[in-house]
Image 1: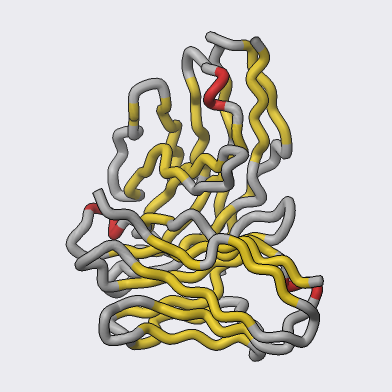
Image 2 (image 1 turned 90 degrees about the horizontal axis):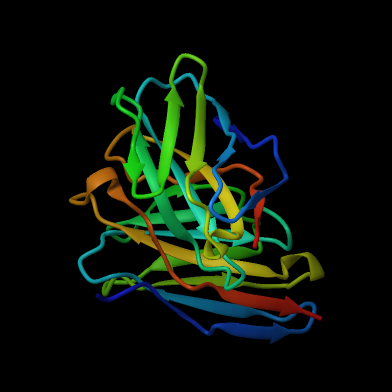
Length: 114
Length: 117
């Protein structure tokens, strides 16, 4: 079965640089979520999109922006990177037709800011 | 805002034994979902078990079962016949059922489970 695809899997950036993380949801899933998991921490919700419109907003810094495109893939854009942005970034997708509206997680993108 | 509390940062269990991981949550909502996720060293988030708040019957998935006490806002995970592959970080998570249901997950801080051979 198709899973959530995230690219790149690993990314190394310098402080003050920009980064773009991509997420390709499971086909026919209508909602995408982004979570940030710092070292030794629990995942924190950043932002979500339903049918290409922003649905919920969590603790996403103003330096970050995201969008969902017509093909339902989503991109998380991160600017003026800081050391504290080093984390594992998860994308998850769900569909309202599923039981529990279950979220399926991608493998994550590990971002390291030097 | 909803909060999820896991009071056990670390737990250990002997192989083939049973272990229970604790989770409490705080919410003013009456309809919601609760989940346990497993995160092995690969860091992949794997759904272990889920429970709908309006269902009184406790969920069970093979060796995994929950004790859901809605009035006490408690949602513990029991792992029976523990196996070496169960060693991982376990996160308890809450999700509101408001609106269309595509709401974000709120996670606890996690419990790291070690399995001793």
